[in-house]
Structure formats: C-alpha cells, structure tokens
Image 1 (cartoon, helix red, strand yellow):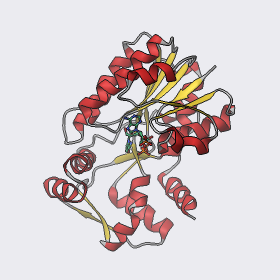
Image 2: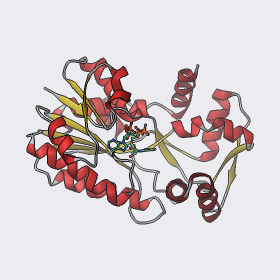
Image 3: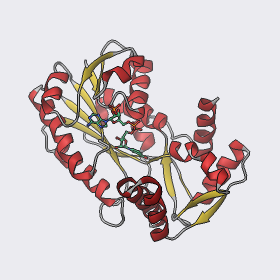
Image 4: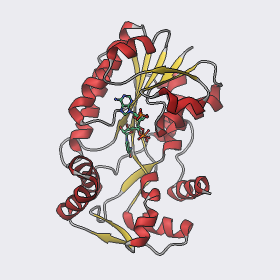
Length: 284
Ligand SMILES: NC(=O)c1ccc[n+]([C@@H]2O[C@H](COP(=O)([O-])OP(=O)(O)OC[C@H]3O[C@@H](n4cnc5c(N)ncnc54)[C@H](OP(=O)(O)O)[C@@H]3O)[C@@H](O)[C@H]2O)c1
C-alpha cells in the first residue's frame, strides 16, 4: 500500500512521516512537497506538489492508495480551491482514502472563524468525494508558545486576551502519532476526531512553563481589541488578525473541546507538563 503525505517539507508533514517510518518503515511512503529539496532529510521517495497546481498532484498521486492532506497555510478562500485541486487529482488517480488535518474552533464567532469555516468546507468536500475519509480536527499547537519563551521573559509574562478561557492544546508529535494510526488502520474511516489534550488556562500554561524552564512568568490579560491591534502591529494584518482571533476564541470557549485523541491514537494524549518537558528536551 502506497501512502502519501502532502507538505512533507513542513513541520507537521515531517513529524507524521517520521512516525510512519517508525511504525511501518520507509518503503511505501511518498512525501509530496512544493519544495521537495527541503524534505530530502526524511529519506523517502519525494514528489513535487504545489497546492495551487492540480496537474502536479495528478502526477504526484499516481499509484497512491492512502493520502494525508496537511491543511494549507493560505488565505481562507484560496485554501478551499487548493484542497479541491488535491481532492480532484486524488479521484482521478483512484486514491482510496483521504485523511485531512482540519482544525477545532468555531466557524462563526471570532476573527479566527474564517479559517475554521474554510476547513469545514474542505471537510465537506472530502466527505462528498466518494473516497474513504478520516478527519482530524487539530487543537492548537503548544510549540509556538514555547518558542516564544524568550519574548515572554523579556515582557515579564504571557500577555494575551484569552482571560480565564480554557484551551485544549496538542503538539505536532502527538498529532503525528494519531495521524499515523488514522492513515493505516481502516477502523477510523468515516470518523471525525478532535485531536487535543486536556484543557488549561493561560495561568496554568504559565505555571507549567515556570516549572519546566524555571522562569517566573505571570499571565497578563489584554482586551480582545488591544491584543488584535498588538498582533497586527507585530505580524501584519492577516497573521495578526488570525492570532488575535485565536485568543478571542480561547476566551469564548471555542478551543475547550472534548478530546477524541485516545480513540484516534489508541493511547491517551500526553499531559501539558509532559509536552512542555518533551519540547525542552528537543532544544538541548
Ligand atoms: N493547530 C495549530 O496550532 C496550527 C498552527 C499553525 C498552522 N496550522 C496548520 O497546520 C498546517 C501545518 O503546520 P506546520 O507546522 O507543518 O507548518 P509549517 O512547518 O510552516 O509548514 C507549512 C508547510 O506548508 C507548505 N506549503 C505552503 N504553501 C504551499 C503550497 N502552495 N503548496 C504546497 N505546500 C505548501 C510549506 O511548503 P514549503 O516548504 O515549500 O514552504 C510547508 O511544507 C499549516 O499549514 C496550517 O494549516 C495549525
């Protein structure tokens, strides 16, 4: 059985491929990437696939039975068509099963909602494709917070608009563990899973970081409007609005969802403390 993973040059794609190599070996794995050279370190067959180019995917998916689509990073409206390019190319090639990395969250209520809405549209497109499917709705990655620790230290704490809202985080390696199972075991076909761990507040996140990194971070609350402006100033309008919208969503409970991780992965999700400690080990 040939299994292909898109965006193999990215961190999630690469983590899923590494997990699959551990589980089933390299032989039947194909990495598809816009920039295949960036994925050479994975040591598997690579094929070229830009999400904007359906023709490239028509070639890249030849002989593929199971396909994992990593969701696009582009603007919401562009993503829908990019994903359709891949789905159509999969149909033409007789792909049997698509696994899609979607996102948890609310499709109406905050500045992150357009992203969630576009993911739900792709979920629908995949469900209507006639192929077998499994959908994972990813929680927020914890890694970006941990990559930000130096900035948190410089500003004496974690500053955002989440307030007391709870967020069920995950990590790329936890997701990779679950996706490897979802791709290779057909008992998951037709399921939609929330791939998240236990939900925590920003104050608890600061405490876990302090415990592992021996920092003294406190949590400082900002208003939704101020935080969106703050992020737009640093990251530009598109990304700033997305990040601001994510914390608006946490405040309103959109990321406090029930976890289906154990059903998908066959084992419980790691605790936040384990994820923070595990991330620190990768930095040494
Ligand atoms: N749950 C969360 O907290 C969270 C956070 C951020 C993102 N996400 C979503 O998760 C996805 C994967 O995250 P990640 O950590 O792997 O991100 P990443 O490390 O930044 O990788 C992004 C990947 O997308 C590829 N890509 C971008 N535009 C493409 C195109 N037109 N055609 C083909 N490939 C394209 C990049 O290819 P190149 O190497 O050629 O640039 C790269 O492989 C993202 O795409 C986004 O949808 C989720």
